[in-house]
Amino acid sequence: MDRVEQAEPRSGDLVRRHHLVTRLWHWANVVTVAVMLMSGLMIFNAHPRLYWGEYGANAPARRDYAWLDLSHVNNGIPFPGWATIPSNYSLADARLWHFAFAWLLVAILVGYLLWSLVSGHLKRDLAPDRAELAPRHLWHDILDHARLRFPTGVAALRYNILQKLAYGSVLAVLLPGVVLTGLTMSPGFSAAAPFLLDLFGGRQSARSLHFLCAGGLFAFFLVHIAMVVLAGPINEVRSMITGWYRLPGNPEQQP
Figure 1 (cartoon, rainbow, N blue to C red):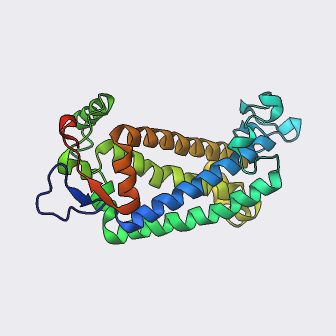
Figure 2 (cartoon, one colour; figure 1 turned 60 degrees about the vertical axis):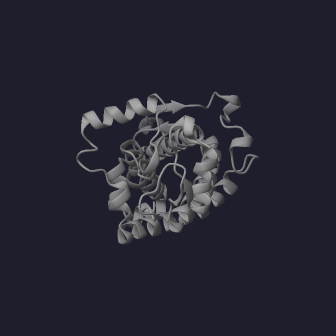
Figure 3 (tube, rainbow, N blue to C red; figure 1 turned 180 degrees about the vertical axis):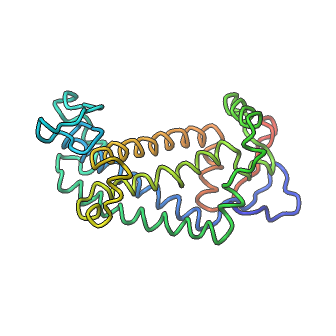
């Protein structure tokens, strides 16, 4: 998010909002995560069960408990073709798509985090301060969102505490989580870095955590889209494409 360029911008003014790097990362992330989620669903279809532990559904003497079993849904293929890549059943092709875009996800995530640190974007725009984390402030923001009261004027250019916590969870927990648990599931990589198996409690536990992190990303996507629609989709999407954003005012003052 860019700093305001005008001395005292007012409601209705068109101002710069998002840096080019943020916009490029946003749209690259949209494509990358979408492909990985859809190809991941196809991979899940090949064995629609999740376990905690080391062995999964291996030999009965070492079988782990399946905490999620969708093998009886839709004749053993729980996710339909329109939600998967490829649309026809193919575990091999799904793995090719998944692994190819996984490296792209890592590259753009590392690049964006490095830029955020060097430019000050992380500290200036994303890191919450002590006052924002106060329970009273958090509760006030929750009530404002529940009542669909969105910031007006210059305040709309700053991330509120709920946005900071949501974006922070994506950058610091969910995206690193899917990357690290994905690497743990790779026999070659986990052999080179066996500490990952200990960290996540085994390959099957890593698979479960991988699925949960992916589910968290999908939940974030749904909430994010809902907020964009409620806050004004044309203005919000324009700012993420061109960088320009029209400062909102009171509803009755909107053009």
